[in-house]
Amino acid sequence: MKDFQEKLEVTKLTLRWAISEFERVALACSFGKDSVTVLSLAREIDPQIKVFMIRTGYGFEETEKFKNRLKEEWDLNLEEIHPSVSKDELEAEHGEDLYSRDPKLCCEVLKVEPTITYLENLDVWITGLRSDETEFRINLRRVEEYEGMPTKVNPIVDWTNDEVWRFIKDNGIPYNPLYDEGYASLGCKPCTLAGTWGRYERAGRWHGKEKKECGMHTIEPTDDR
Image (cartoon, rainbow, N blue to C red; front, side, top):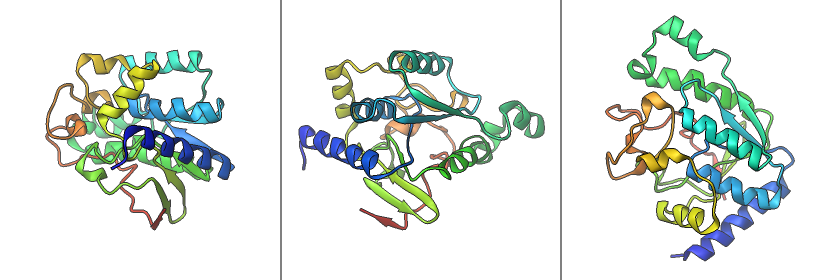
């Protein structure tokens, strides 16, 4: 088993490879602790790396304020991606509580479709995914290839939750204040609960529903490295 310093070095090498090997590179950032950790490391290689965020309309106000803070302090090259159908339009057609009655459709329209459209213009996208966040990510790989889609790179795939927090605290990395309010994982406000709801840190997402992933990361890779 690798110690944390070894993991950190592999993460840095992975990021340097992705940023130098591919022409059209972007980093997906939810402004949660994991993607901000990856962003902090990626900026050491390319301070103006392209960053993108999906705007569903259901985000936390605290996340919005934190995003604005980092955008200014880190001079982020940030693109905020909006779905083709707005939150208000979706509610007008399906009702205000679609996220509760049919969270799969809600995520498909507000998250998955705009992400896929954005990825069409990339060669590689970088994420903050970790394999121990949930049982659905156990088989996550560091580099994944997909048919007709850009390469996906998960630099901190083997980091633990404790290691992420250790890195943040040791390096003075800013983090979303919602974690101090008891949230373990951050998503859209109506579908995210504070507190500990199960073995995995994402157990507070879509709590009580069969759904445990928005759908952005459930496509099976065709190859891996």
